[in-house]
Amino acid sequence: MFVWVILHYMSYKSTLQEVNHILNDITGDKRIIIVDNASPNGSGQKLDEYFATNHRVNVILNQSNVGFARGNDIGYIEALKLKPDFIVLANNDIEFSQKNFIQLVQASFEKQRFDVMGPDVFVPETGIHQNPKRNKAYSNQEVVQIHQRSVRLINQPTLIFKLRANLKRIKILRRFVLQHRQGKVVQSDSVQTNVILHGSLLIFSKDFFIKVASPFDEGTFFYFETEILDKHIRAQGMVSKYDPTIKVLHHQNTATKSSFQSAAKQQKFQLTNMAKSTQRFLDLFGQEN
Picture 1 (tube, rainbow, N blue to C red):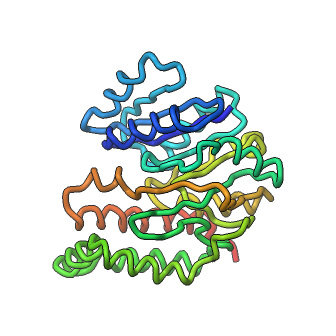
Picture 2 (cartoon, rainbow, N blue to C red):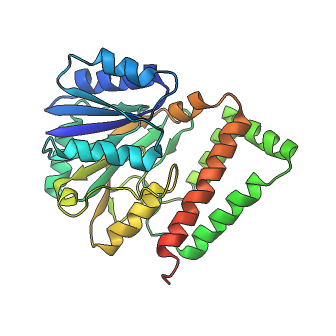
């Protein structure tokens, strides 16, 4: 059995479409756990009422917004109670383009076992393939640079900060920048192991269950979760795998966008949490060479 864990915040329509899409369009034995991060618009309660009579869907209503890592860990721990073969952690803006997704994951595992696996994650709005994020672990020096850049951008003059934030929302410009960066990252057309995976869709196997109580370090609220997970995976000799024969679409950031009325507020949230998460990485691994 496969159990999906879907983290929900604010975007009722996206989560509802996602859950019904999984239930109706993907073949195989499956259950779904929705984790609502205390959405202030009441959408979590609304989802709970909508799926109240559906035995394949369980809705967890968190009393506060505990962020990405803790929210997914709560769902993961609940999913383990169902004794699944695989747990799929998915954003609420993922579209599964293959009806036989479950069978493809099972075949990939049988061909080459993994602890955690990521598929080809394609963002149609930008033309970017998000997996794999990277084929080697981050060094402390690299993370220090990311941390310092985030702090520097947060402290920009207000006018420049707002201008930069609004420029990032221009679709054509954003697409150009992301595609330019894509040319510098790891190729996405072959199976790879020991890579950093994108957090929008992660598949955990039983091999992972027996080794790790929950996947994420809860010292982060948002961002850099899979970079920290990657360090733990490597330290414990586990296998992360990227398999491009399994494909999903990622209609990016619906939960984040629905939370902010202005581009500047969204950017401040992103940079502030990136600074905090990279600091957490350094707190955990800063003594390593």
